[in-house]
Length: 263
Image 1 (tube, rainbow, N blue to C red):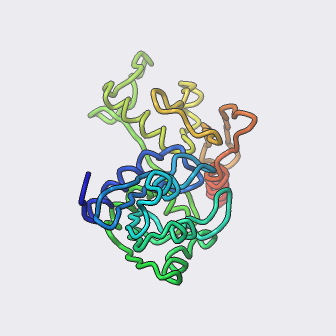
Image 2: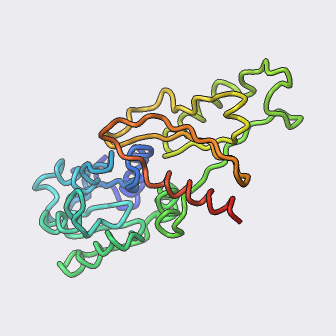
């Protein structure tokens, strides 16, 4: 991949970001491609798990001195605060990057401001390249940041006559193997799986994400059932490793459902 345009590099960065789906919560997925002054790719990376190095840091480590005078193409505005890792905006400035191309501004008030810091340091900043595609890849996180509630995906399978199972309970699945693979891949990208209490009582489903890649070290999946009727709740939690933390989206979703039943 040599002599690419920033548009092509952003397309690659968006593809890289997608590799972090399911392992970065509560952080966003981010991809970064570094171009040298001639437009050649000298580094690339993505954020793999919360607490791990950000996409820009991975790309800078690959590029080394070749990043100086070059362009960083990033799917999300570089962070500008010190959390579990340092600010990416400062790292880009120290590396001598001359231009940063950003798809989507960071809506998180804690971490935003990277574009301002970069411009103050004399770095050219352009925002909005392939923004729609980058937003689509970060939809769950952006929904949480912008609206303050979880992004919910509704998955439903039914036969042509509107049924979800045989009346005598003999049908284990009504979907194809390909559809079930897609469902498990989808489960691997979310923090929580919610089913109706009737499903829990009738089927006792595992709600696991099978045949998916290993989560990051702080990842913990929750599967629970919540009956949306006043006074009726059933909760089933998968045990978490002792060093793991329950994703914040789970608590937010439980709170949302609790308030819904209280109306």
